[in-house]
Image (cartoon, rainbow, N blue to C red; front, side):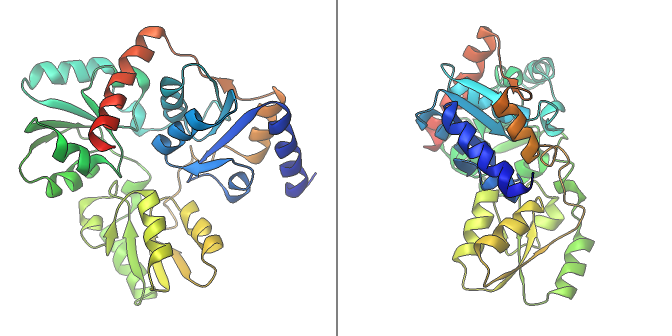
Length: 305
């Protein structure tokens, strides 16, 4: 069975079984082509709620499926590959956050969405890379404890100079692989290309970029720009996706090392196995976690729109 045949089987099965397939932007092109919606973790959670299907299959990593279940408790949410996790989401626990809160009285705890549902129970508000600046500016609190990604936090801090920040020393191992030396080398190979990076990158990389923003922001910038060449400083799947969507432009990876093994763990056969009931995992969360983790997400919606 080749890729096209497998895709046709998947499309048939998802209709028969009332399943909506959601794919994160870092998934492979062959998964994109069978998905009902593509986007970031928060956007996909919203789409899950809007979808008419009662069953949702998440092609991404575990914290994304947890967020989806939290926002859509009435639906059956499945993770295509149960082993697909997020190293950053596992860098902190709820107990660690509660201890940090005790050690930093007066600070509002702001968590990146790339965290577990259990951890979210201990924070004041959740943010995404695309909404963080707006949400922080709309928060009345002046003292912010930003977790777990200090690189994203410092990028936000520069745009919110009236706030006082403290950080946890966490971050994305994939984006941390990009260095200033990588930027210099990529620019030497492609001197006319614009550099677009994710703010999870190191500050010295972000400062050299022509644009820094979320994955969706990077893709929209490249698609709408009149320029024709771009160096992409985020998960390398985006280089391929942009090349498909903008065949008249050229896209280059900032580094060949910018590959997330957890995002790449999900394959088209995994999607098929989940649809047949021979693979995947349904996400179940304790009621206490569901109730606790939805509050900071609702606060994010209130402050960020």
